[in-house]
Image (cartoon, rainbow, N blue to C red; front, side, top):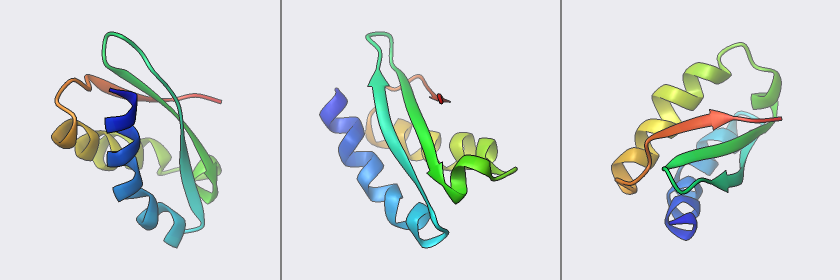
Length: 74
C-alpha cells in the first residue's frame, strides 16, 4: 500500500511545491494511517492542517481506498 500512497502523493506534490512547500511520506500503518512530514512553506503555514485534511487526505482516500486518515508528524 505504501507504493500506492506514494504514487497518489506524487500527484498532489506539484501544487504544494508551487507554494514553496512539500510533503514527505514517513509511514503508512497497517490500519491505513498515512503519516506525512510537511516541509518548506507548508511546515509553518497556519493553513497546513486544512491542506492536510481537505486536500491531501481527500486525494489519497480517493486514490487508495485503504487509507483511513492522514496525520502530520515532525
